[in-house]
Amino acid sequence: FIIELVLKMIGLKVSFLRDAWNWFDTVLVLLWLMSHLEDVELPINPTLLRTLRLGRLLRLLRLVRSLNSFDALVLMTTAMRGSCSILAWSVVVIVVTQMIIAICLQSILQVFILDESKPAVQRQAVFQYYGTFSRTMLTMFEITFGNWMPPCRVLVENVSMWFMLFSICHKMIMGFSVVSVINGVFIQETFRVAGADDQIMTRAEEKATKRHRTKMKALFEAADTSGDGQVDREEFEAVLATKTVRTWLAAMGLAVEDAQTLFTLIDNGKGTISVEEMMQGVGRLKGAARSIDVRSLMHEVQQTQVMMRRVREEVQRSGLAQADMQKVALHPSQNTS
Image (tube, rainbow, N blue to C red; front, side):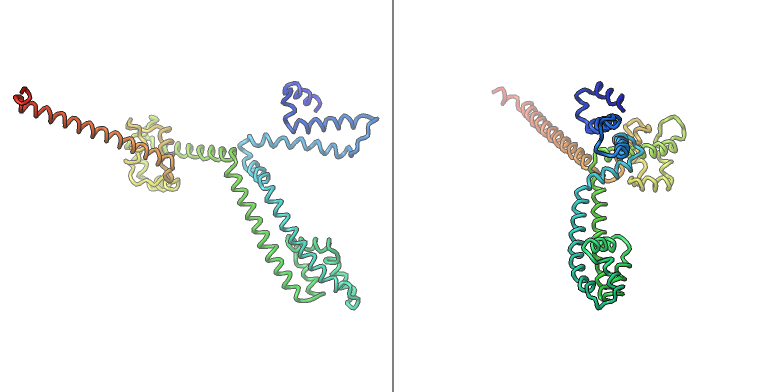
């Protein structure tokens, strides 16, 4: 560790101070050196110091983000980091609600616990779950997230049957509705983070592109019966005549109604299609129309309209000039005079 730290200081120089992990390593190394000095007594347990050294393994998370095989782990860590605010507010909502319920419930049951006319065994059983505020808070969380039947049975069997309604309502509202809403918010946040994180979006797009290339390569190999590396119109129509291939393309978002039209849209005018042209052409045609495609088409239409307007103006000017020349040819004496 010392050698690594010294080499990093020499190599990184001033940049060494900008990384928080470097500060973490420096503190650990200094504490380790101080622990081996006989005259220095550390304020912390040496066993805890050894445990803190394992925290250096957290640096592997930076390496994990660069490996494609850990996409699920990257998504989980990114979502957890982005959900800290939701977690904080969820804790506040649950704790405050449980505190209010615990205070009210403990105040109601305090009368039963202090009533000496009641059997001591029953009062002791109720006190075990609801005797103090801390015990009642623990019981509320047990009812919400754990086994809710024992605390419910204590109230129903020893105090009153009406507490059955309280227990069921608490479980349905807090244990089911509130917790389900919080889980839904966390799931929504996970999808939001996954859709907003640049690295996750880049990897998802790379995977989709790789899958598309693999599928189009398989289609090209099935269509290229001649084996010359090019697919002509006859080969393309032959492979698309299979219902299985049409269904397969439709599942990818490319509904094929006319194989000749599809070939014309993919072909660049050579009469044959290469594997790269098939990948790019099918990739552009499948799915719904994109905004950039629609905008490009509108731009081309506008340019065509401008060119047609200019051609019409030129034709009109040419027609007027030709009419003038005809008049001059028919009445030369008038022009001479």
